[in-house]
Length: 359
Ligand SMILES: *Cc1c(COP(=O)(O)O)cnc(C)c1O
Image (tube, rainbow, N blue to C red; front, side, top):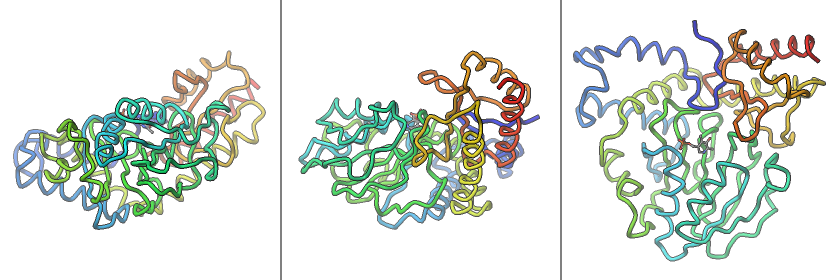
């Protein structure tokens, strides 16, 4: 029996997608073998690859002058790829907003190749908020401006998109496809797939084509957006199964009503949980109300000694993977697209009951 899965990543996938993959696993499209066992350059697979790109373009209304890339090495490889691809056109200075662990990892990588100007940070209050839009001064010569729209661990989501002079770069690993985005405001968007797209092993990049000629000459071939774009993300063998499965998720998303429907649903799901947390005397959210994430909801119990009991009983109730990140403790419920409203209803009912028995 499938249970409700609140894992932060790799995360829940839509059940119909898993069923389709199961059905066609052994004999894909009647060719007598699985999708994993054919050349990535075969006519059959080419259709899969191109269709996935087209569906993603449709879902996010990606303009013509942006390339869609299917990349390897996860979002983490992009922490390095961003400076490699953008520090070669003169300036080796970049502006970063520091909002928590993922932003920090991106900053540490960029510092290996150039100057990082941390223009704003929420470290003063333990990364529980997104800095205000007027909190920073941009570097006059920044090659780019990087931020993390949704900090997966802290559960902090920017309620606005920064307006900056330099190309805006966003790590959307845990928020992509959860709402419409004005792609034209960004220079480069990237996301590891295993939260809101598909299985791990693949990452999506969306890059404005005028940024493809700014790479440092020593850039490793495997990190070059230009080479990826020119080779249709097949300069070397891509993770074909992850790409195929992501494509099935894109089809599923379209059938659900696309990102507009996901935006509405994400507000409903997270709203239900936050309302409960705010009513409760026993559970609470550590994040500022103005920037609470729709995707990742951290919460704490009034008595941390009950954490173990909570997790054990939750699991018995069919509510999986609610343990908070090891660095912050407490609990975290991740409510990505594939997590249904019923999962959150079941979680809130369980929490209310737990509070009554232990509060
Ligand atoms: C999970 C996550 C990452 C890391 O992704 P990998 O694919 O494991 O490299 C980076 N940034 C954010 C915001 C994430 O949520």
